[in-house]
Length: 310
Image 1 (cartoon, rainbow, N blue to C red):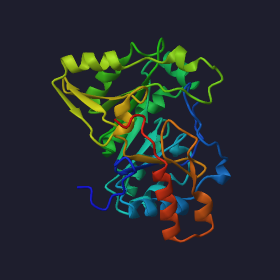
Image 2 (cartoon, rainbow, N blue to C red):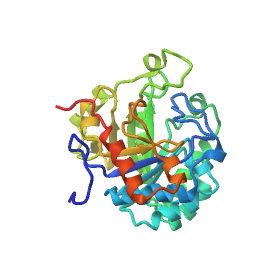
Image 3 (tube, rainbow, N blue to C red):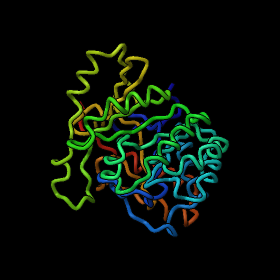
């Protein structure tokens, strides 16, 4: 199953690459990291993104995820997906806030996008505005339903759980997801390095361990995703909930099979660290050989460190 796949020094296969293609966004969420801020004129071009994905394919990466900011703010997003799809990956997905998804969903499907994850933390207009600083809930919901309609399957909703903001809205979101055949991913909040409030994490962090235990008790079935940080999927009442807990969760790192690219073109070996980035885009812009670029990728992989090696 894992032939021709590069593994890091802790024997974790690198199966997935997540590329932040823009940190521009039409919302301003409380918890946003704004990783590696760059201006629109300095964003990686479709051809540069194609070359990054081509090298990733050489080392055995099977899945590509495009993220932001919001990737749909890029007017060339359909071209980007078309170029990457030509490399014949097993799966190409995109994470968006859904505001522009109604506009692009059909064209993205035709271009080769397989599925979408939509960041939506609430179905309550007041909570939505508090979290995003915007009033686009109607557009986001319409975008989600359009994605379901055109077959960007499975559609997933990423719901970041925040204390005293939306922890009481999980049931409503689950019912919405069940109604439309959507998978609900509940995400434990991690600290934002760019939030003005030094007490951000303490104020809003809501641990999901107790919720996981409750789900385990009532679920019809529980499955663990071996190569996705050991995440567990809970099946109940014809619906599906997945829990993402990167905080104090050794399984999250020990089972991680994902490498990341920042919007300014650096390899980011670890989600929770920014002190081991590896420069990549300048080498691509110098037209260095694919062999040299592959060597740089391998250097980034060699920088990966698990939260817990036990």
